Image 1 (cartoon, rainbow, N blue to C red):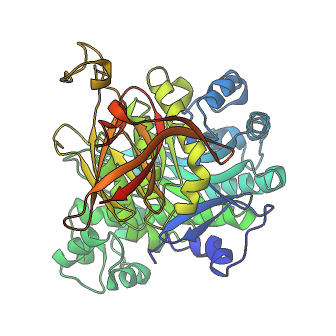
Image 2: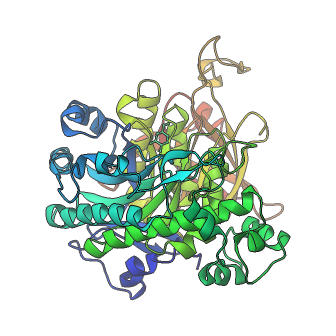
Length: 551
Ligand code: DGJ
């Protein structure tokens, strides 16, 4: 069994492990199926076709005109910030009018919510802390940089800081239990947002210096004793420093920025854990933490040091058992690489933020097909425009059609994701599925084709036209049967047995309606290059059912 996520998921997974069938009235929770982790909502596995709001779009009056647009994008879930300074403007006086407004509007639109707790930290900074916290730096100390200067980042080393945050988060979760446990509009909660220390690898306040000189906690040393998923980099760092089984932070992990980052990760994760545990005691929903990723060549402190990054997954796992998994905000072109790194680190894939360009549509299909993703969510979704909006709408329509099948297949190795990974990949992508080898190549232009009477297809997009996205997903839906969904992909099937050929018995285009296959047309002749391949043309999203035979 692949390790789920972060340990505490144990609590949420317990019912499933015991074989209990989840009742519709249960709170949303996580459940393992094969190698996958599923999000269960109203007793059913749920795939988040999401979008995250821009940071300042989460107030009901502002958001109200956008709901029809969000619905038309085929979203089923909106990721919405909850601002600490708005819900606790005076210490201990809570105002949940904003949350209640969001709940009402989401329900009216038939949408679920993932709430983002903008508590102590949002992109490292403490910009959403209430004024009574910001102003009282004696009671709520700040982190300090290398020159001893105080920065607008609440220090993780001050008990008053974490206690204030945990109290507020607990109040939010308590309110949610009362306001939403029946309707279950909120299906998951993100605790803090992109935590991590900048501009140094660690806080250099006196309290942080004192903590840095203390012995490394036994729980972390115990975690290092046994190799875990994706912890090779951490273990290499530890071995390079001598592989000690006791000592202070610089002794165990080395005195440089990479060692300091482990210290930072531990303390940020402990802080986040304390906040999450206080919330879970009030209302147990799935909790995750999201990360700002690393730009090539950046060092800890240049990027937010110690965040929930894949090379620190073992630290977060040991320090934050109430965080069920860690999740990447993927704005970089190497989407597949970051997705794979999180999966290798034992995490279910959930992408709370992604670049909202045209590629988002195919990255979503790839995430569900290749990695049994829990969900995929472009950022600042209310601002999405064409051509990205149309592509995402079409891709999410495919995901919606295929959800009953995708969730059945999750964790069983019977689905694949296909995506154009960059111009340096000239040979396309090979995957094995359902006893066949699939060779996928990608077309990123809607140029003239054989079927249009052109004998030799002309490559290259018309001058100035942006490339169309190319990618999709495949489900081995039955013996010798595949469903292929996406755009700009051509797949050639070969046998895994030497000397055996594979042919196409039938290729049909169609769609699922209410779980039933509705045939649109047979694709033979030019559309399959006279039986040589299956092709989802560029510039249009489609779904094809393919039956294969061997000869
Ligand atoms: C990542 C953060 O998590 C978001 O809140 C937002 O600041 C985006 N970056 C902006 O690109």
